[in-house]
Length: 392
Image (spheres, rainbow, N blue to C red):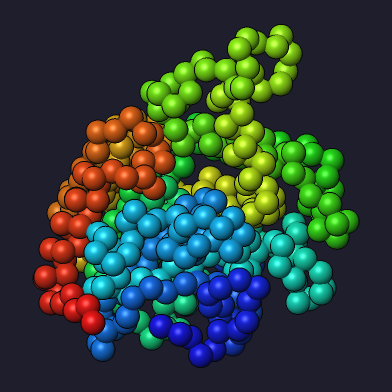
């Protein structure tokens, strides 16, 4: 669906200006507006606008769910899940995905221009939260003329956004699919994020956050942050299966600090390629948003209360999924959400997928996960009377 108000951007997709008439109030108390949101759409919005699915991306993701990425040239990040005939079937649903505010692929964030100064925001950009990201998405959905989303779906930080949507706007979401996520960020996960942030800020090229003004980039610090984070997305069995202790292009160790092992070379490659597509300050802001996420905090510390709007059981239908080898967002975190939903007699289903692929399994070919989500969405669609669009 083309957006006639979208402005030209240096990469494919749409971008819309929001909050022009009334700035969006952030959780920090600051106001943001006007601001821009970059987004992509796939499929066709039906006549009564009841088939919209919002896909929420993870920490280092963006809105290019299916398209070839304009920077990396790689395929869309969730082509396993979204597309014609896939579990999130674009022959049936109108799929929306936006780059979160604070991001670096077109939505307003620290690398964009501050209209008050004419220079990049840098650290003058206000600290944002998952709640703020969702408020911006809500404005986008309203801009597109959609009153209720058929489904909100996402993994990891995307799953946090899904949960926030269900709690903040229960009447605007028919179904919610949070995958490999949690209702709050754990101390361990905050610790990993802090290591990454300190690596960035310790890089002399960071320039106190003002590197864009100096035409410099903290590439080394951002690469180390990515390397440390990437380890948490995998599992020990997966790393062993893929690399073991195999040497990289050599017959014996060098007794030095080059990348002797394949796993070292792999992590260095992950770091190098990441810095070409991601902004260091955005990494600081988005990881901080995840750290602050605590769904129960505004509900007396009782998670079940978050799913009891105005004292009534949430009308949202939930399907949660976790992975047996995910130690970043372990199954116990998903079970805590399920138990809270059960406590208010909500409509909820749950599956733990047995896999050794770790946290990133939600991005990979996991037939059980795809089968569960397809079945859940098909059931919800039948309940809503959403017909599949016939191929021409």
